Image (cartoon, rainbow, N blue to C red):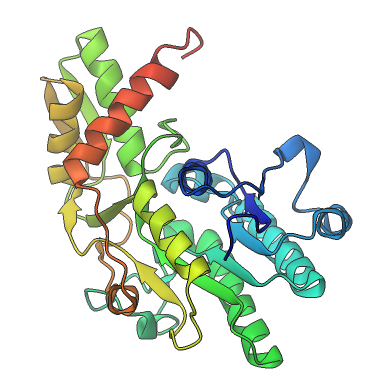
Length: 317
């Protein structure tokens, strides 16, 4: 991959996409293609075809899609499966037709069975039922992964690389308590509780499920590694994690320290926990020569500073 190659980052304003754009800029890539949603609707097959015909990207990073936490997944399952399936189908089809050199598709750890041996190896995929609270999203991501593998197998070239990151965090995350993932939602809730002098905060579930978190900058680094190196011998798909997880209770304690919240935490055990544990076995990419470098608590502090500067300071929030 050369610094002048055309690289299309779909979803460049989101958590992972923006981290990849930053990393490409720091590495000196000068032809990064970024198109905002209102100018390119990825669920529109004809629009996607026209875009690929006009820009002819050589590399594609598909970080666009409908994402959200438990509440969003339970409320809008049809939207989750429809939008993600359409985006993946349209982009992969256009990328194949236009001769893209290599494409990365981000799948999700929620694809794994709800009850799964830990840490989860890629071979465990499709060995059981995913967590019901996110099953529509999980099925759409399983389909995207299988699309990549099917293209590679049918056409005899390993061009489409499905990557399975665990829970991502960092700047440009979604901090909406109703639609964000657990870490960013906790950060906002504890920040607002601290600012308002709240004596207690009630969280969903029991606090016992365990989650693994990876900073978006580490995902960006792994993406550039996969794009720039020969991946012919790499077995796909590829897990992407840090090898360390936390209970939601432990996570809440860490976030209270970062945000300065000093009140109590109550747990509503009548609300769903989600999968009991999601720890990835990332041996494939570790053996390929990549490893994460962002310390969790340092990354969390950086994320909180970004939140204070870009979200908490807005009058509308």
